Image 1 (spheres, helix red, strand yellow):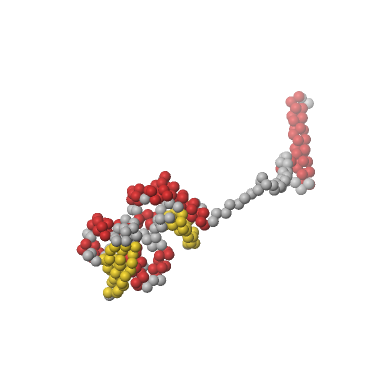
Image 2 (cartoon, rainbow, N blue to C red):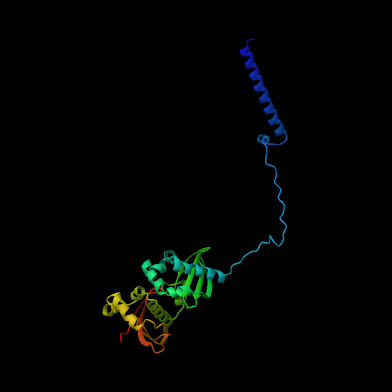
Length: 285
């Protein structure tokens, strides 16, 4: 036998011995109810010891109540109004934002006019209601201004800054349950509040078309009139109610909380429409 043939035989023999050894190991593991890959070393089993309680490792749980959440949201939005106006504008409820401010410049004007008050606002009263899409946190500051936070998730919300720009569910419910004289009073109240909030575009849209054509052909003339006659008279006294066909007439006295001598008496004519819609006019004398 030559040398090359001898070397091949030795190599074949060694390979055969290795295969036989591997096969034996596999069979032994199978016999011991182990998987073939268990021949590889497994991590050592880890044992965990219970941590014993002592005064240094006590776990305390913080529970936040509704009042605290209201305060957190109010302070968060206050911070945005002061430091991040763009973010505060985006956080406004979409429908409310479009009706109340039109664009971010109007919102910046609002912030500038109320800057001193915004810096000092604090939570004075609050109410929490469960809505269809989450909780509604109704916050009122020390000046009587509303901040209505509609929560979509923790620390995520949209906000409404009054109760009269858009019809909130609570308003619609109250309106639908009201008698005609009460509905008319609600309409007049909404109109006057929008005037005092200087939301002239929305207030102007409430005027009856024929009344606009006769007295206020553009919004600017309306603004000039209400600034001289209605602005600052936020207290409403409903005096006498009467029905003239499909028009309701309510005699009203408007007063200023700052000046008791600043009074105005007007007859408001209201035509109720579908839902909470209405048209309003008043005597010009």
